[in-house]
Structure formats: structure tokens, C-alpha cells
Image 1: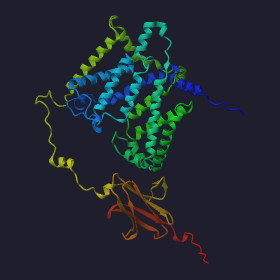
Image 2 (image 1 turned 90 degrees about the vertical axis):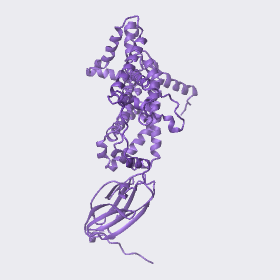
Image 3 (image 1 turned 135 degrees about the vertical axis):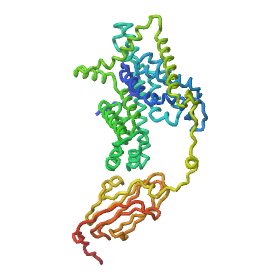
Image 4 (image 1 turned 45 degrees about the horizontal axis):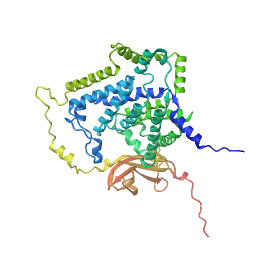
Length: 506
């Protein structure tokens, strides 16, 4: 049997084809339409608060200050800040529809990055970092060559010569794909080093919180420990394998399908809205020309009204086409950008967050009550012992170190497991688990140290040792104080347990 070695020339040819094979940028066009639209959702919501967040009248907190690098970015007066903010929104919207696409990204992307860096407290987030990178890649790509106002105007001008969609190297799409591969793989490496993620504790606390938006589904699922454990392992396996499946013929759709399901679950269980929509919208960059052809054939086969999707682009193109022939498209774009700057300042004037144009002048600052101010400056109020604990439950089964079931009735001879979950952060603690009968008499006491890096503690009891059928209480104590108690009933016949055989001695 003969084997042939792969030559370095063939390897280089494969890499060259991977980055520079020419295709029509349909996937990038979809990313151009979806991603800026979603990235603008939080930015448009901040429009009435630009004066407070991004101008010299407010209190901008630049990202560089967190790293001790000062404030290198210029902070502008409200009029100029509002004007640039309006231009940013118009530029990104213009990129969505593909009108002067390259110019729109060249102006909108730096402004988007600038305003995010200017407010690291609320505007700069994980999804805005990802959006900034993708917007930069779209800026240097040819994403406006198809499905855009520019493409429609060029077709009307050139006629049949522009009927065939142009082809370009696929490296911008590859860069976006590689970005997500690195993001997911890096997230998996971080999770692997976090024991609380695999125990389900980290996910449970997040599901119960409303740090982002309300997530009632997550609050229900948080108590299903087996589901949390399975979800944690599935997530890590998917994130690790994503870079190895993303470019395989079948593996690509499997990886993207699991990704859609993963981000949908973060939407309904963790209260994340913008982040999952932004990530899934970028999945369109994984669609190659042959995928779009297959989708188009399916749309024609099912007679779906796909023409309505492009109606806004054609309407905008008709309005622009109606301009005087002597007026260049760039001047039209600049005029609309100027109008957006004026409109943004008018919105700021109408919002008037400081009451500058009110009858009584600027709104006065409200003094903080002395007790509240002292508590904010230096609060040494001791934490109640019971507030250090998240939950205390009893059951009979472990799964991945966590209590897998909750029960209040046990058969004689069963193993009873008591588990307490502790809120982080906490100090080193001495915990006791006490069994009391229905007359509050202590039957058994067990204790253990819980160091500050632990989030839960387990206590196990064999019911055949000291207990007889009856009603009992499982009591959790910390620092000698009762924190919580759970009732349970022990049933069965002690005589039914198998007896130990005689010991053999020499």
C-alpha cells in the first residue's frame, strides 16, 4: 500500500483558497443588515441621555481610566456630542440599507467605538466589543455589493452590465467566523477553570437574578439541578468543538444549530436580549454562496413573498434617484447626515434632562439623607447569619456533587443527604447539621468547615444507625445560630433490614 505525503505547496494552496476564494458576499450582506440594526437598539435608547453619558455636562467614565491610563479621548460639549451621536445612528442605519455603504461604515464604526469607550459603566459591554470588531471587518469588506441601495442604483445606471452579482475574496467572512471561534473557545477555557459553573451554582445564581432583564423561565429552571449540570457540560463541549465543526459541510450546520439553541436559552433563562440577537445575526456570515442559492430555490418552490423584504431598499433608491442629476450621491448622504445631527440636538432640547429650559431654571440637586450617605461611604452593618445562605434542602441522590432530588419522606435504611448552598462571597465558616425529633430533642450532630472558596456543603446520614420510624427535623446551624430547618418523615420497619452475618475470627 502506497502513501503520498501532502506537499507544502498543496497546504498553501488550501489556505489561499480558504481566504481568497471568490464568492458573491451574500452572507456579509445579511450581516450588514442585521448586526448594525441590533447594535443600534441600546444606542438609540440612550439618545435622550447623551448629555449625561457622553458630554462635558455629564460624567463620562472612559475605559482607559479603569486601567490607570487617564482620559485620552476628547469629551465634547453637549451640542457636538449630540451631533456626532445623531450622525453615528444615521451612518449605521445607512449601512443597514446599503446607501454609500463604505462611507457609512467609515464614519459610523469609529463613532460607535468612541461612544462605547467613553462610557465603560453602561455602554461598553461584551456585545458592544464583539459588534465593534464585526463593524470594523464590514468596513473593509464589500458587503454593500449586493442587496443594497448602492447595488440597485448601480444596476439602474449600468443596465444589464450589472445584472450578474459581483464576486470578491471571502476573507472578511472568514475573519468574522474566526472571531466567533476564538470567542467560544476562549469562553470554554474560562468555564473549565470555574468549578461553580459545572456544579450549576453559577448558573443558578444568574437565573435567579434580574441583573439584565426579568427572566421568569430561568427562575423556574434554576431548581432543576440535573438540567443545570447537563446544560453546563453541553455548553462547554459545544464551545470547544465549534472551531473544529464550523467549516465542515455537516458540522457547520450542527454547530450553528446548537449555537442558535444556546443563545435562545440565554434569552429566556438569563434575561440577555441584545447579546444573543447580535451573535445569532452574525451567524449569517457562515452562509456561503451555495447556501443562499439553496435558500432562494426553496423560497421559489414554496412561493414565499420574498420581494417584500427588499421593498424598503427599492423605495429609498427611487427617492434618491429622483434627485437632480448634478447632485452627487455623496452630497445627498452628507446632507442627510447633517439633518440627523440637527435632529439629535432637537431631541436633546425637547428631552431637557436637567430642566435647563424650565421656568425655574436648572433642576436643583436633591440632597441625600445623612444616614444613607454614611451607609454608602462606610457601612459596617453586620450581615445576618441566615443571609449568608441561599438554600437548604434534603434528599437522597447526588448528581455532579449537587443534590439531584428533594424529598421529605424516606424509607428506613435510606441515605439522607442534606445540602446547603452559600451565597458568595463568604468567610471561612463552621457549619453544623442537627437532627431533632418531633419533641425538639437532639438525636445527632454533624459539623464541618466550609472554606471561603466553597459554595455548598453536604451532610450524609444513614437512617439505620440512630433513627427509628417517625417525624424529624433537619436543622442547619452556623456560628451556633439556627439558619434553616427542614421536616422529614422516616417510615418502614427496622426488622426488615438484612442483619449482618457473624464475623469470622481466627
